[in-house]
Length: 201
Length: 254
Image (cartoon, chains in turn green, cyan):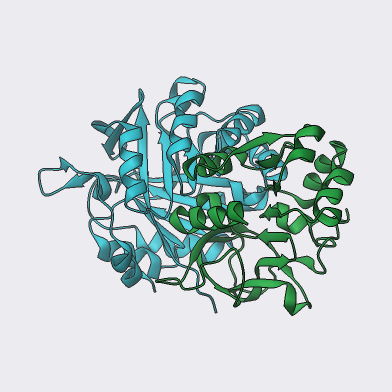
């Protein structure tokens, strides 16, 4: 059972829809017992970093999530803001991030570059990245909508890169922790396949 | 330096729970059931969809949350909804239905603070400022107020800039005069707006064929939207849902 962490932020309706099409058992919940019992978690999120962190903190679930993700080693997937919150912090807000991943969230600040980075972009997965197709027929494309992006000095954390003005982290993978900057739930067949791979881990 | 794909977006108009297509914002012609149309667009792997309720702002009705939720449940691509959004609470309900982006048009003219409030809570990338442009009797281009169905005195470029300053993350730029006319996009206007703002611009109004879509993208639009060409086929405007396939869309990239 996958539990999508319900902290009042994020477009969870579409994630549930996509998981339903995949026939993956999933539910949206903020109930500590259900989160405890889940084999996998999805941390969704859209919008402002500080607002997201405050809403997540207000649920009181952070210690439970840390136990799931850091001690029990169960898979956790952060999507969009959910991914950014797993980093140490963001230029969008003084509120610190969860700090599970060595890296930080930065604003796209290249002159002339339209922000948000919005639309379909190709990603370049590294060899062995478990959420991506090892031998795609055509390059995998995903739907991105974001004004801030994750960068890390830890090359081993990078699961896929993407190019918009400069290279940023489209996806990271550190042990059982996964993050995707794009929206798999809105990325048609590519996203469907990615969520299927996460469910099968 | 990017590999970002420029989008091709069908813009669907909702009236009394059916899809319609207008000409110059009037003479709505019924083109089908929304859920059926969206399933077809899903099969065609459409980049994104825009769904606009063209009645709600005029009558002051609430958005049709139940229908929006059903539509969103069928969309495995990004969905933008517009029509009748006047409060933060309505906006939250629509996002909870599984919609990514909200488009504000009449409400953004009446109350730019609503754009600010939505952007602060939902993030700029979920807030689309929609602007309908029409020529006045002196031939000047002005912002059209779709709720009141009349022209304002606002200059389109200045209005776009003000809404981006208020927090809009994207501009949907439509032309009333070209709507359903198959006469090509208003390229001069697209160029002006795209140069004036730093957010993506979706151009709409007037497309007759894929070459027009490409022209809009060449003028600086990040996405080319259209209505008629994706719901009609042939000179007699027979209803046929259609969408260019991946290879054709790849050729449109500038």
